[in-house]
Length: 185
Image 1 (tube, one colour):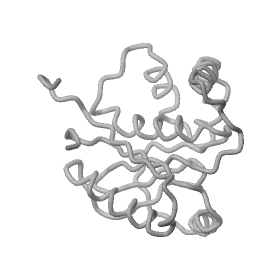
Image 2: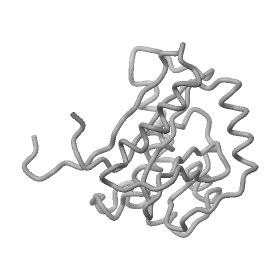
Image 3: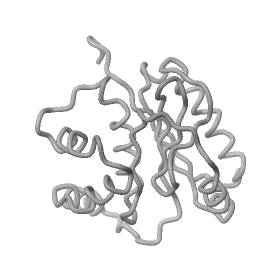
Image 4: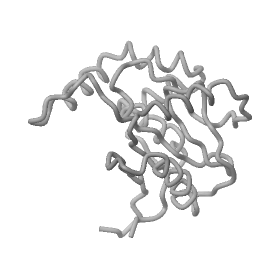
């Protein structure tokens, strides 16, 4: 059982020639996107997990309490009025994030490879729409109506379709970001 409410969903999937072809095709499509969606480009290699988390948190700041003067609090206040490329540039120049990313990437016993064939994206609900946020794409992609109460189920439908395109692979992972309810353990 996934704790409720689900605030965002991260999805890891294998990059294939088919997913790359679809990404390029989607980049050429016109989109109608809510101005409330927090989106940034990924301009740093091997940072899709970090970008996915930033997309997740950036779209739920009204529902969670960030610790004052923390990195996330400072980052989202500083980038709130920036466009997606300006946000990416801000992140690139941030020494604190670079150090944290390097420490996390090298913390385990397994050596982090520069040749990565998987990618994290975020699904979130903004203004009643399910959005796919992928920093490698030109902008958010709306997958239709959604709500906080149906976010997980709505994202799962899209994710299932993505998995069905590569059924032999086991390189998929879904992570739900949930809000801890008062009194929960």
